[in-house]
Length: 133
Image (tube, rainbow, N blue to C red; front, side, top):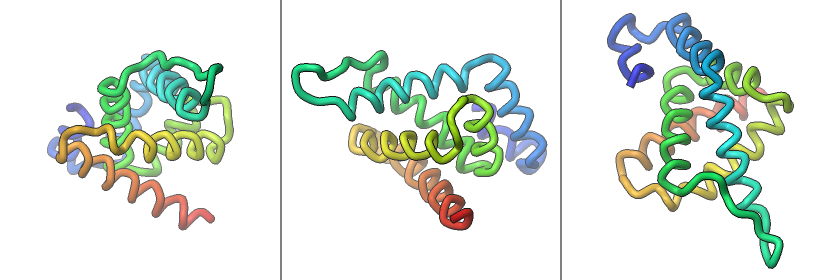
């Protein structure tokens, strides 16, 4: 909600999104989101009798991705720097598993409006990734 309101308050300046990203980092909320999503990623990569179980269920995973989608759509550079700051892995490694899980989970998103939000955010991230390559 705060991410959505920022655009109406001051036109969505990069500084405002940096403040939001910093609060997500300082509260460890972003770290918890990424940890939960990484757990879901590991589950989706395991099969057979040794298949792992996820710490989060599908609706919560959608909510986690929705938070990330709002920030990525609002300001992709702030999103990338926040993700890098929240993890100890390289940006490429984190983005690799995150995008893989996001695309894997996409069909589980029930609401069309949420699907639209996620597709727009993924498009932003892929466009940023393409310009960096």
